[in-house]
Length: 98
Image 1 (cartoon, rainbow, N blue to C red):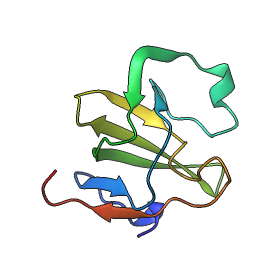
Image 2: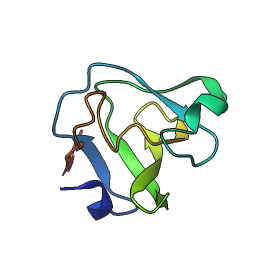
Image 3: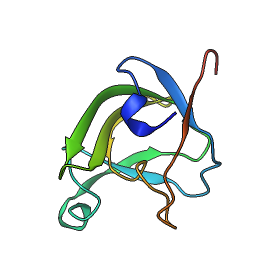
Image 4: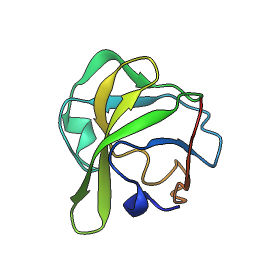
């Protein structure tokens, strides 16, 4: 499924393996704005973490930012799950049991 199909309250993972941690921020942002933001130390989505979607926000008419709750209990916003580092779109799968 695509990012715009994620449902609030659902437990998800990416279909592709994530090799890097993803920083989480305290407010919604676009991928291009995050250089101006400060992340909270230790607010990371780890490569093997599942996450609950708390909010999906459309930024700049075609880019999404997600508010997540990680399996380690961290809440934060990321725009890094829209595209990977090669700018390929992430695909998601719903997780029934972690």
